[in-house]
Amino acid sequence: EVQLVQSGAEMKKPGESLKISCKGSGYTFTNYWIGWVRQMPGKGLEWMGLIYPRDSDTRYSPSFQGHVTFSADTSTNTAFLQWRGLKASDTAFYYCARQTPTVTSSDYWGQGTLVTVSS
Amino acid sequence: QSALTQPRSVSGSPGQSVTISCTGTDSDVGGYKYVSWYQQYPGKAPKLLIYDVNNRPSGVPDRFSGSKSGNTASLTISGLQGEDEADYYCCSYTGTYTHVLFGGGTKLTVL
Image (cartoon, rainbow over the protein chains, first blue to last red):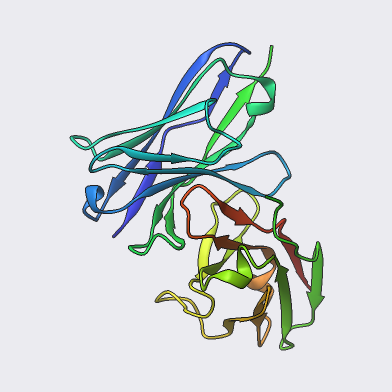
């Protein structure tokens, strides 16, 4: 069974750093792109970008380029989303999602990680 | 790029059919066969319902169907059930991995 399990909720202060994780199982982790999606409180879904775990090829949405970093550890089948310098506006649910082989949709999703940034 | 345009809400009675529209441009919905639809319950992760315009993943009931005409894609839910009450999002992959657009979401109420 394909599963993506994300790390737990986080509370941080503005300016702090954070790294959240997304662990894949039930499939060959290195063969599928992983996408990241933001959902701010009460709002819709926003595309952040993708990482290909096999070679860490990353593609960022222009809206998030420079503010977040994607990475992956193939030894633990885990993808990561990282911030250096959180802002209050980063408060949101963050979802990882496995991409279909054609990279035209997201077929399996993690349960989401709530990140709260507040002074 | 702007988000795709969806109605904020739709409603229907059990057993009826409802259609949710998703309007984009020639550069996204109209230009590619890469429209997908997701169902999201409050506090839960989205779930893939339709991919590549009109394909259903295994396990998704055939009450859910997708189509596209020009720059507008549609999700039709037939034989509405109470469990269909949720938020629905369309999505268009635009041929570059960096430009993936979601619709603003549509809240479906089953009366």
